[in-house]
Length: 363
Ligand SMILES: [Mn+2]
Image 1: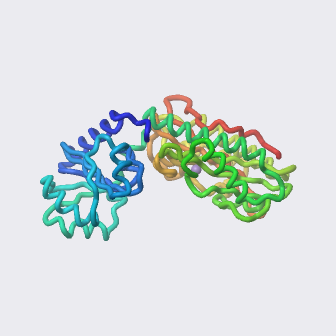
Image 2: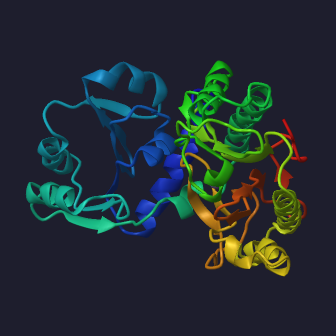
Image 3: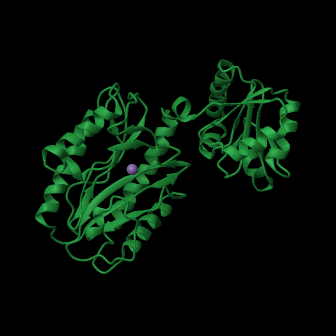
């Protein structure tokens, strides 16, 4: 989050202080990477934030002192020597903390026991998952950053379809995608790249293998970039040589279902309502049983976040939520098709961040 100016993290700390106040806490302890990155700007892999009404402290070890000092400008940086559970009791005492909130969805049972062990009568209170209150609605800076991550993935697609030919392996296709993403500024892929070809495309999450591409193969590529901490996620399905008629039919159904769902993904609807737009179209075409996963998921600092577009998605959409739309049809022995974009929820039409072409491509 290098571009985040100080006011962004300061506003987030202020919001956290409102939560501290409303829950009668003296402090919160933040240890999940995405959450401390969001609240401090520090992108290293080890940190503990202690936020009180007056103070904001980031505890990290020798490896990260310099980086934390540069990135987490709104925090006092403390260098950790020994274990955090060894240091915590002294910190709690020094800051007169009697009731401390922690991330209940992230803290492990054993770690909490260790923290409590040395802390005397300090009360540890779960504040659950921070995402719904803090990260689920993206601000303009976050949407711009995700857009850049999306653009990097779009570019990788454009470049990789020129490289695809019979005889190369799925892993080579994955390497090409990842190469282009890094060449354009990604720090890494946002998850293990999926390249599933031929009958393997019937596996929605078939990660790239040593299988060689053959004429007639359908090829599903599902991948994404991490840019400045934020993830993108895209799926495109292309054909190597003339596809079988049924695959062409499936491609057009998925495309139609996706377009309708994107059109209908607006503020005020539940995730279930949006999911059902695509699900009904696919079912009407006779492939209801072949679309066995949810339509989409939120994306941000994590690759899979709330809200969900799924048959059980009861969250109501609000402006600034960033979500994937990714219907698919999978037929064992034949192959499969999935097409995935990232959209931003708005009052009317969503903003579709993904620009990579999705007409039927025959290589
Ligand atoms: Mn996805």
